[in-house]
Amino acid sequence: MVSISKVAGLMSCGFLLCLGLSNAAQAENAPGPSDVMKEGARTITGKLSRVEDGDYFVKAKDGKEESFHTDKTTQMMGQIKKGDRIEAKVNHKNHALMIRLVP
Image 1 (cartoon, rainbow, N blue to C red):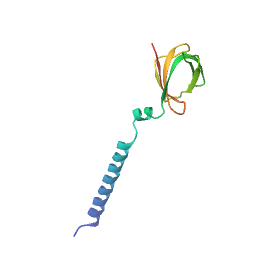
Image 2: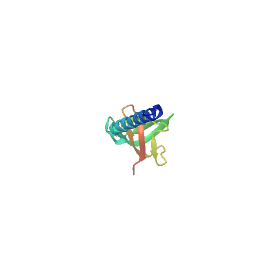
Image 3: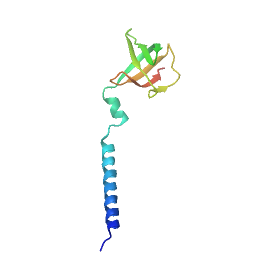
Image 4: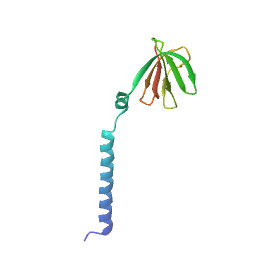
């Protein structure tokens, strides 16, 4: 006859295996960073006119000024300061995902 501890051990192993497989299936279907960029992200390019409390104000070639917000999750590429020509990838909430200098 099979002991209760062996049956309980076998059932818990099966349960843990099912949990692991369901997490792997969810991760496979989750959007990656490049997919998030495709959904509503836009690029702002221009001259940085000012920075106020994490809000960046950029003046485009056509004279139109646009702004976006940054925080610790924003990827900064280079030392960016007022007067620099920059390119920013901004999501649908007007949050900068990445800012880089443009030559």
